[in-house]
Length: 334
Image (cartoon, rainbow, N blue to C red):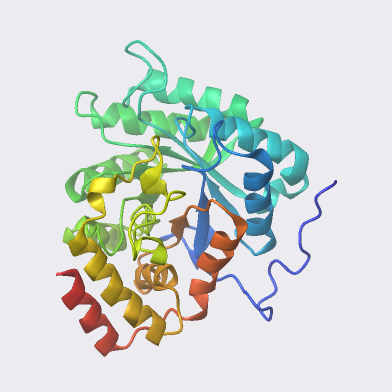
């Protein structure tokens, strides 16, 4: 069946209007909620399920899909699967989409298939474009700092990729504040400004508040947190233990059963009580909590089913927090 996008996907008077935020000092606007394909879109997953997730996301104004060369499992399969859906469903809407990918983790054997050399980054993006059937991506990230490659070389590779027309913008991910500031300065000198930084950030992972957000705000660089729900921990799924269908129960997942401790469950119960008072699910409150900071351009969510995606999108219905709520949350998170 031919996919036709919802004609009301940008309607601000609808039941689930999308908010768009300017990315740093750039001309690019991103949806407040973006969809990441880290999990649930690989070769081990069900095609029609993740196809429905992508269609539903776009139908509700989610114009940004985020990938990386190693997403799967197996590595590369998320890009391949996205490429199939792109060809089937989204080619007519390519100019409405912001598609991003990354390189920085192990993709192939030998010295040129990992980290941050120009050789690796250029080759990896060429492979990603082929897997997705695209001429260019909108954003290309260096996925993690490389301690053994000069930062100037890595940033020069990002600059080259933009000048080659293979990416419109570039970003960095998992960079600490000091190294991010250096990378941003190098890119500015090269004439290809850093558009965005993608750090791990949630109620349970707050290292970015130790300086990185200040750097991004000062330099006019966007911020798009990943793992905003702490791999699903910040949901009501784990309030009564570990369900058999949860991410913690999967052998190929990143959330380990050892992370779901009695102490964590107590915190989740207290946070859930505040969320219910706000008329939200715990997941919705956790996403809204990130979006309260104007330096956060978009929040990158995952979804294993359509209903989960729609629940996350409903976080936009209440992004305001009273000082009393924020104080209670801080006390719980200490």
